[in-house]
Length: 429
Image 1: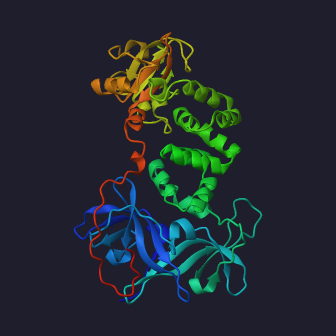
Image 2: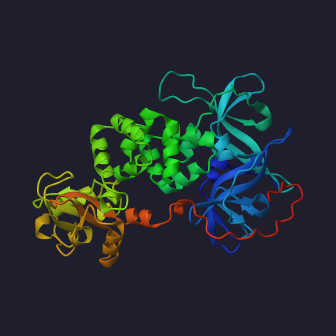
Image 3: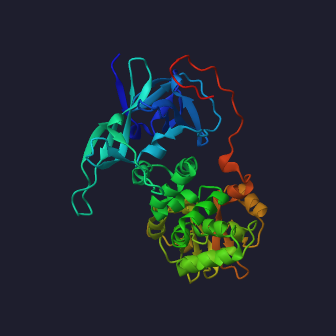
């Protein structure tokens, strides 16, 4: 049998199947252990299974690895993956790492790692795909690339020097926010902060919105005041308010003062309401239009890619002004209703007046009953003067109703089956 080689960055995200062809999940990382005189040995894969849980699959249970798919024996332990001493994750810890050439020709950064299956059926780290420093001053230039074996390079870290996280960030570019959040929280502490520092503000904001509030606070505190304020600016106002509400009053005010005035104003307005009220659950940025606006104008706003699907389900018609808190709420126009009318139709003529708004002081339970009773995905929220102040969407209510640890809930454990016998493969029990 000839040597088989697969590059890990290309393997990430590939589907994992059992022998019958049923999909089990997708690859998120490769776990290796270092050896004294030989390249690191692959001991298993980190697989994301339904529920966004990451589990460990021993390499002994993998019957085939290719860049398009992974085939396993079908028997896996569904306990959440926990990295152990001596284990190294290729995606999370090796990519972006600086290494030095043993021949003294300089240094390079690891951009990808090939794992190779030898004639004995074992998987080891093979070639490294490296990028040397750029030789041009142009900001668009990149350094030359080269391949090297594990024995041809060595690490020589300066104490306190952080490894580059740029390459790892690039591999996460296609992950959905919830998947990115889960992946970040699985990283070692130091690496998590390095990657968070490299992520663009809007990308990190999206990921933080999918994390438990304790983790949100921890990451923002580690990033420093200026960066934390930038991230809070990029978050949805209700999510930013939830994070800030976890902080001491003095710290909360410091961060609000560093935020953009308009964003801070929205957050301050939300912080006035209790967390178990419609005002505490709502977002202050629904789509608001006048009665003279047309169906075409409303559909154009709904098409914005950054708009949450639940908020895109309807627009709210009010008297001026058209930013929350608006003038008096006239009613709601649902997306599906708009599709039944020509583009030039005025929104004021097709308002749905069958669903009443909720008060900002209404309880979360009352909001949940209203959404369930009328099969809605969002409901408008008004103040005592019947001015629109925001909208509560179904995901906001679910976040409130579910247990605090629902994002990390693993469900029942299933005992691990007896391992495949491969004497030379290190066991992970």
